[in-house]
Length: 373
Image (cartoon, rainbow, N blue to C red; front, side, top):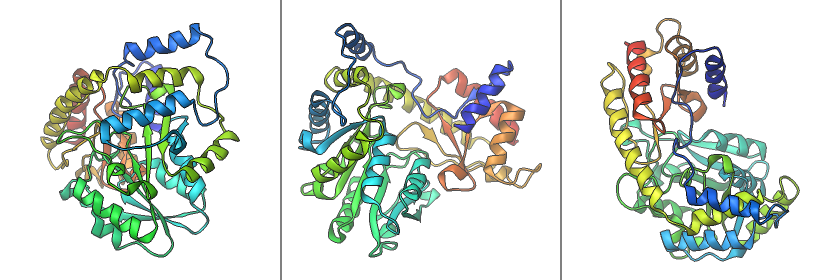
């Protein structure tokens, strides 16, 4: 958000900024989804709904997850929230008490650390290997588990690295958690943007429902970031607890957005594959260009729409001591916005979103190359 604010300030001053900071699709929301919202307005569907979302949307979410991944959730095991971030906040508040430990692989999405801290929990970070594509292993997670471990958070495909946990490894992580009575949160924000193999959910493993907590969202899959609709699939007692919390904070998600989300879940899904094909083309271009910059390394993202290059070659030069300073100087001098790796728990990387046009990618990477060289 700071990167976006700084970039917007420069734009308002007439500066030509290339923005690689935004974590949202550059595609418009599909027309069928927008039309569903218009119909909701025409039909005056503008009142409160149930605090945890309409039954219609919960049914649609359960149906879609079953069709995509083979799961079998009921509406009593589903809650609709104001975006995926809201889901993760409510989920963490409902199960993490003071002193509880939460295992988080590094690099991690920025919100994980802060919601755990807010709940009074303790973050236990698990380092991953850049040379292995930042993929976390069951062995590394097992090494940090203690009697205080309450929750393991996995984001696959990962924001910011694009790392994907392979099915076999994910099942090993599930087995670890199930045996020890630890919850396993699977953040499926980018689950449909997978460049190799078919999308899957760890929740589809037989017997997983008591352990696995699914955090999902419409934001990336259907280019609905501003609509703010997310969902959780979890054991019904936890859903009840999350619903109590939500009823006293935001209450229901926007009624009109919920109608649009029903159409997203039940309507045509072809827009998802079109976006994925474009992201794959951009991914290949971005990784190639980054690797052409002398001294820069970049693991190939296996999913999502981010590259996470190692720009350590530029640190320690010209007064740039860390990635925050690198990002600030890159924006000020070359007018390119990136997100510093400190936000995600690493100190030699920046995140580049390639959810933007090829024209912008070419311009921005030219500037980045010149800046580092």
